[in-house]
Length: 155
Image 1 (cartoon, rainbow, N blue to C red):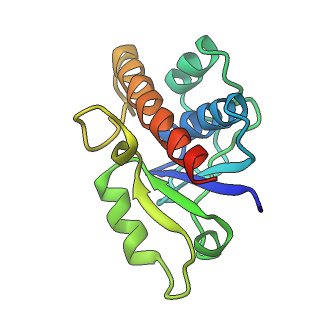
Image 2: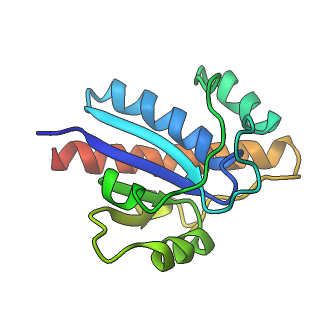
């Protein structure tokens, strides 16, 4: 069976989705799940930039590697290249629905769909304090735990 290909998507690809990418890569490896994972933003505001310092801080504290990550914008081809496109909030989910080509083969879903938490979206900590980045991290962890379990069961 070919590997699962997952793309995490937020607005600018500098706060939430890079952490989700690194976390999912680590959790999938722990679960012995064959995956390819990337992240992207719906907008081009930060293309080529490193993740935000707050995102780097929470990722590093958890032992997650984002050293080579640079922001990129989602492309039409991503809807055919990835098996799963995971939006981190409803606004970006709406953008993904609008941009999806008719021949899209990806399952598009919000990350918190897989979570046991009550929140429907992952907090965007851009411009906020360290506590916001920690909240984001905890939300990502909950959603990714559920997503990995779901994929492990399916494959």
